[in-house]
Image (cartoon, rainbow, N blue to C red; front, side):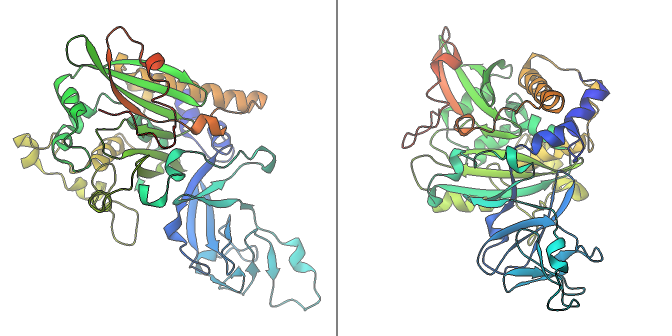
Length: 428
């Protein structure tokens, strides 16, 4: 269990918190590229780490991310007009460029220098893959751009979605590194989901409900190994990489695409879940891509025009007690993403970890909390740069393998958990 004090440290990510300062040392997903599809697209509200921001794309295609509110009277720039190389406030016409610099105040004389002294707080916003990434830290600490494999494979090999989750970021992340719940919560989907079914590994998940966990350090985070019994003399290993602060890759199944998540704090009680699928060596099929768009695999079906899932806490996730009773669906909630979200949100906005009782199967969660705490405290107290910002820390893969019982998963799988361009994922 965690003390209340440690729980506060790990879950609070506002500007003046230790964990907030940690997150501000990384490039974070801020938007899908589809949200600003072309120059002079309408501006988009963005809330990250409890900061209210506005994103826009100017007439030249450049991206901007800055304080949401006009420096004049505090009106939201979401109501503004993007045109002629900037964003103009709807209230009195003040105009800003992508750096947040005010470039025009219509009420001022033409020879006035007033604009030069007005600048909104702004942050870098760049496109890498299907995501627009923001860096909210000090310029001198800005790390290299993201090197995760899914954003660098050809466009036909990858698909990215996002959804709003109504819980603190940490309880969402912890679900991403907990492989033991797969045999229970997701058991029905292993048999029916088009992005999961047919893989040999499903049989191991459904026949061994007592996985043994072993956790190995990596330069950027952890490798969480979950071991289940396989054929005589062998174990089935599912290896989940976690890269600080909030990137996880789900172990693959057969030749299905590899998938994973970023868990990005909106504020202390909400987070964005960016979900990706990609295949290292082939294009996604039309059927796979459609299944992802329809909310299968680890994606969600969202309310049109929003990123809120159709199944949400206001409608009890459209839970079906009949399918739960019949055994067709263990939880009665449809879809892997919403099965996870329903239980993580059920804990409340921030779960009280001082009341929990952990078991050895939670070793990955325990070690992740420890690593986060050490990194946040070291940054706060000593200015020590955190792990996970270097490109080599991010070039990791998940893996699903069958090994002889005497072999160490991390020693035997060093190649399998490393990005190898042009080489298929290690999967069962």
